[in-house]
Structure formats: C-alpha cells, structure tokens
Image (cartoon, rainbow, N blue to C red):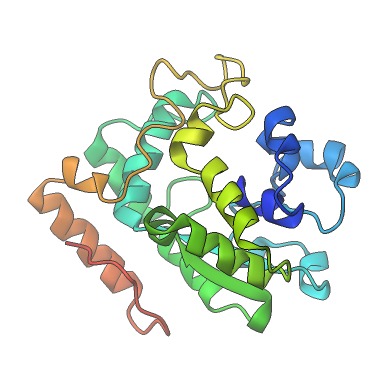
Length: 238
C-alpha cells in the first residue's frame, strides 16, 4: 500500500518510485523522519502508519483525511513478523517461533495485540472516510485493488494507468527496486543476510511453520479475543 497509494495520487507518474526511497514518498506518522519530509510532499499526501486508531493524532480526527486499512491473515502476519524481527536490529530477538507466537498473542510486540488493533480501526467512526482491504485481495487481483483505491481517493484513473501502477507494485517489482526494497538502509539496522525484507509475499505461508497444536492454540486465542466483535474475519484460522 505504501507503494500503491503515492502512484494513485500522482496518477501513475513512476518518477518518484524510481528516484525517492519509499519512506520519503509515504512517510510513517510514528517516525521522526516525518518532520523532515512532510512539508515537501505535494497535496494530497500519502502517509502510512502502524498505529492503532486510538493513538492517531487529534488533527487526523478533525481533518478530512481518508484512511485505507490493510488487514492480513494474522497467521501470516506472525510468520512475516518473526522473520522481520530476525533481520531488524532495532527489534529484540524473537526467540523460537513458539516463543514469538506467545509474545504476539499476548501483545508483547510493537503496536500491541493484533486483535486490539483490528478492533480499534473496524470500530472507528470514520464512516466513508475509511476503506478496508486485505493483503490477500491485493495479491489475488492487484489491478482490481488499484481500481478500488483509485475510486476511494477520487482519482478514477483510466485502465492504462491502473495497469501501469499494478505492474510496478507487484512483489517482484518492489523486491528489485532499491527505492522500495530497503537495501539502502545500513546493515547495522536491517540485515538482509539474516532475512530479506521482501521474503516471499505469498498467501498461506503459515502452513509451512505452524504445527497442528500451534494452529489450535493460535485460533482459540484469536476467536476468544474477537468474541462479540461487530465484524467477522475473511480467513479460516485452520
């Protein structure tokens, strides 16, 4: 989404993704780099965040800013995060996969429990200012997802532009783009020899990591945490 959104907003101009690192194209709200680059961004600006809804700044709530919330199967999130913790020097060692699963389920990871995060945004009062999409939808049909984002942002891009954006936002395209693959980050912060930032990008890789006992334990906790929620998950946790 960090790659797609700026391209949608600038109507398919590929120059930024070839010349500007992604953290400057669509900076994170929670990082200090934001203050350096945010005033240089052309309106409408694309910003990204990992923050739960309750930690969004007051200015967000009083603005007309729109939000696109990307959800992913939490089992695949756990696997992805496990490998990211191995290569990111600014995060603690994840330990074994089983140990990291416990940390994830208990919310002893950055940005807290996944269930709390999802509930916070799904329960927001943003109305038509928010769009929900899943990682799996992006993987399954990227052009269709770009069309949805285009309509939501009021751009209504033509089909050639949609296809151009989709082509340049595939996993393989981003993995080979040094402005997007984090290879410009010093090894002292992100060690791609331990695990590449762009590792697989597939749906369902959790099946290669979870034991049957871990599947049962993980699913039981997630279901318990989401009891009474006003939404249902689009994935089967088994």
